[in-house]
Amino acid sequence: MNKQHLLSINLTRWLYALSLPGIFIILVCGLFQVGEPAGFSAIMGMVLLTATLLPAACARLGWWTGNDILRYLLRHQKHLGITSGLWFVAHGMASGLFFFDRTQPWWPQFTVEALHPVWLLMPVMVLMLITSINAVQRRLGSSWKDIHALVWLLLIPMMLHGNLAIAFFEKEDFAPATFFVVTLVGVALYEAVRLRSFRRIRWVVLSIVLISIYYAMMG
Image (cartoon, rainbow, N blue to C red; front, side, top):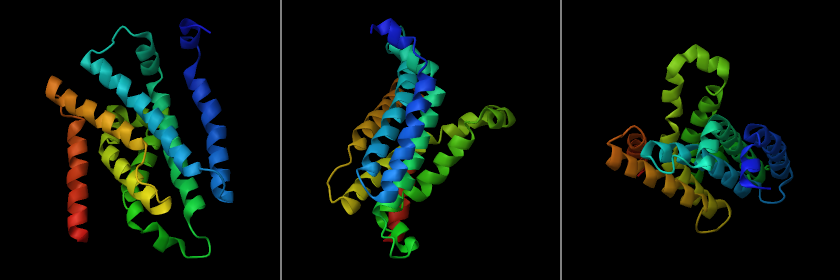
């Protein structure tokens, strides 16, 4: 199978054809507490999110503008983003099913420090998924783009949650998704310096400020 044939494939169709059954399997694994549903769903979400944001950043910076793969990913950017959000929401649900002790009240378990970033992550992700619906976007006009820019606010909380959660629930030291977050934040920082465009990095900085204030208030 050559490159031109691969690029002719309808990626949007395959994204949903593979993601929806995959998400169902992840939720079943969480329900029956088997396998690694939390880790797999987190990586899938981060890979798809990186495939959503990184090509657009490369295009803005003028990198590989003639590259067929870059243009291919840009054509499917919306649905890469939607499936990324679906995997992240599934990650939250599967993780709760998998890790929570069902003989104990759920609320104290949800308030452990490792899950504090989720209080921001999940509502914003759900909001972005809702505002990805065509009818909602038509009603909002161009303002839906401002809502989707909030994805840059989520990167540092994602990294924080990943590392806290993997240490708390799985007793491991490092969340692999950190590599993706560092790459995206690095590109946003370079874009700010190179193009004097602060639209994305300002959200990253704001997230760091909010996290710092939060932990300072928590003592």
